[in-house]
Image (cartoon, rainbow over all chains, first blue to last red; front, top):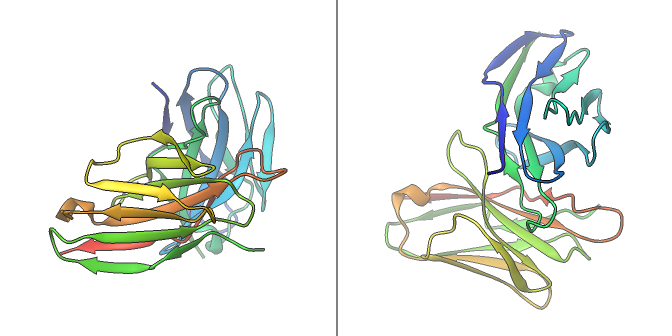
Length: 113
Length: 114
C-alpha cells in the first residue's frame, strides 16, 4: 500500500543550524509529494510541494527535491530560526485515488536561541 | 485571502452523545476532505466529497456520517460518541484553477469526549 516514513523526532537544533528531515515513501504510480507544517495549537499549513520527479519545492527558505530513484522527499533549510519550531509532516497523494493525503508520523522540530 | 472555516473550534461532549462539525471551504473549491488527528498522531483520512457526492472513504466509523451541501459546505455527524473519538478534526478543501489538487486545511475542531 501507499505509505510515508519520516525520521523520528524530536529534533532539537540551535538557531542558524542546518536542518534536514528525512522522508521516504512507498506508492503505486507517480504520487505528488507535500510538506505541511503544524505550529502549536494550529492547523496544517502547506509548506511546499512537488508533483513530478526531480521537481524542487521551496518556500520560506525550506526546500525539498522529489527523488524518484530513492523514493525520497527530504526537507532542508540552511539556517533555522526559533520561529521554525513546529511539527513537520511529509505527505503524498496518488493520482486516481481521490486526492486524499497520506501522512507520515510527523517530526517535531525545536529550535533553541 | 479567504481560508477554510471550521466550526465550532472546540467541542466537549459526553459519551454516547452526538456531535456535528461544520466546514466551509475556500470559495470556488469543489472538493472537501475530512481528517482525524489523535493526540501525537498524524492526520488520518476519513471521507471526501466532490461536487456534493462522496468521492472516497477512509477509516471512518459507521457511527459517523457526512455530506456536502449545495453551497459546498460540509458537515460531519458523529453519533454514540466514544472516549476514543477525542481528537482534532480537520477539514481541507481543494479545487479551482491553479491549485492542481493542493489541499488547504482549516484550523480544526478539537473534540473532547468525557
